[in-house]
Image (cartoon, rainbow, N blue to C red; front, side):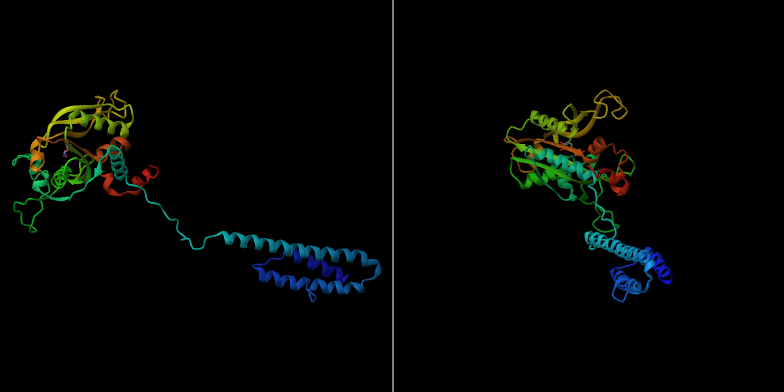
Length: 346
Ligand code: DAH
């Protein structure tokens, strides 16, 4: 009977058998099943069992050995699958997920504008943000007393800190300054797009900022006409805002173009029917443009009797507002990730 009790107590031990690793499992196998193992010892005792009990005890012993082997195999399989899973892990990865950055909406829109104009032959030109009066105003036909030169609009740079002396160094207030840089350094035909940041002395609010972004376009060649300007702008508007977009050119005034115009597009929110965005008119203004004033060509050393040109300038924030309905200009420079993440898929 003692043998039967031993078998039963081993049976319960084996059922609860646990091993934390392969070494512990091997120790268990040795403990129970090796030549000197506990179960083998019970088998050795079997020959002393009285004949009438041999059948019952023999069956129990076999059952014990099978269950032990089964449990050991089960535990081994668990280790093997765990090890296989561990192999699949990339242990060189950082524990923190790597977050991908997003494109800034102003970059997205600027690049789209560049892309559209590059398809009709425009290349990119750049100029300095810290400029002189000559390139920003003088050569662009601004009369010396023109109000745009007033301290109200333009940030002038003091040559000596704290000493306010008249200065001709300033932060450019528009990208039209790049026109004069390009026209003095290149010969026609000229077909450039000039994206960049501009500065104005404005109080910061939802609708105005002390810096913003513009894209300037300039085309100078023989026989460039107002019809060419209109065609290029119609093409741009349809590419940017959809094929149903209409444009309208209203007479306006800029010192550096003659004639000058402001361009509206049919409101892309209501489709021209009239809504609160377009103040019920069905139209929204997006840019200024015109034929380059002959005085500007001449001041840059281009013969205005041989060459003519058109120019246009648009605000990137304005276009972005129309495309993505960003109503508060300050969002563009605050770098709030909750705002920027909304452009992840763009
Ligand atoms: N420079 C003008 C501004 O900042 C925009 C502009 C208007 C640019 C007409 C042009 C143009 O090239 O032809 O308001």
